Amino acid sequence: MTRIPLTPPRSLTLRIAEWYARRVIGTVPDPARALGHHPRILRSWLGLERRVTSWHALDPALKQLALMVSAARIGCSWCLDFGYWEADRLGLPAEKIRQVPAWRDHREIFSDTEQLVMEYAEAMTETPPAVTDGLAAALRDTLGEKAFVELTTIVALENLRSRVNSAFGLTAQGFSRTCAVSWPR
Image (spheres, rainbow, N blue to C red):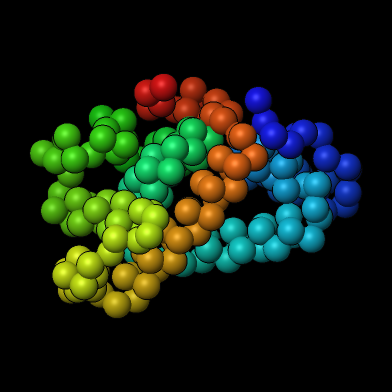
């Protein structure tokens, strides 16, 4: 049960967000409806999300793995559900996507770089963050500084998303039912 009604006032901002979401992903995400209770925050959030799509220094598959590990660590079922859908759209193998929440138990299916990225996402998501100098240096050496900055920022953004969605009580919306990967509930 959500902690905020998903029926906000029908502001112009919400109507535009709904139109855009239906056009891009086929439905209106529950987080947009929750944020719709405060149109200025919704506008700012949407602006940020649109700008993030223009970041391309980090490989999209690595980015998706980091996002999903962070969401799994926080326990945001909405983010994981949407993450499986996004990973499927990127063409990531279903078996790999399914194992992301327990990646340490399935290291053999992940490359060294993928494991390094997921370890970093976990370390950033800890409270307090548990990033070490060695881990950061290994990632900078592997990815380059620009991609490292992008990775750090996208994991921080996923922490924001996952914590907001969890605090609102949002749960899986059914995105993973429409793809080759089913979310292991």
